[in-house]
Image 1: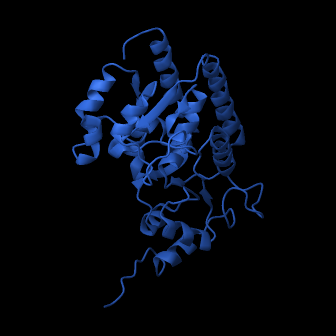
Image 2 (image 1 turned 135 degrees about the vertical axis):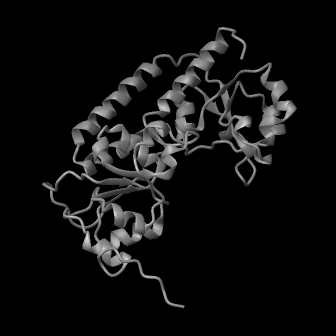
Image 3 (image 1 turned 180 degrees about the horizontal axis):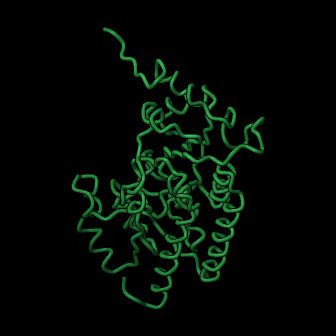
Length: 299
């Protein structure tokens, strides 16, 4: 069988990518030796990762965004879903990138590895953002994007705004540290080393998952959840959003009965699925939920 060859003014996809090599030099955009300090600010930026989408969008340079990932328009996962619809979206194929001819690509550590590896081999500017599992890494990622965009001043502004809000919320965290359990479909919870766990701790809670010996799948079965009687149950999914058996744990009558008499709060997954400044929206909801509980308000 004849192998299909894609032509874009050059002979193959790889050659086409090479033909459109970027002027800023080779290697990753952040922390790569040899990059010129006077490299022009990128004007055709492509994000291949949901979390990178949201960080890039936060900088406010819409005219320089050539494309975001296809997940950016999914309201379940993306806090910029509505605004993201005005941008082109991509799944990260080489063909898509050839057509766009980006001068900066931002990806995650597990994003379309084949395409990312090819871009790097061809000397493209690629910024790979690590997964932020704490606030320090969140700040570091903002700084990395700012450096890649040639906008360190804007990055500093975003970090200062994050820290100001962080300080304001911290003043509201007082008293005992209630035990909280995050509960998703399929009985999934959040363990130490996740941004969700970081937000829980900052908001004044102890993550019950760190106290328990969980199943090898990292799940907290409903029966055990109700036995440990957490001070707060944090629902990460709404059962009505799922029509499959994966959400049966959230529809179980035992959980419904428990929630009618115990404190709980719903935190949309999109608020803290990524390590971006939006995680403080989740923190504010968590803090407010405990404030209501201590006042004796019913859940």
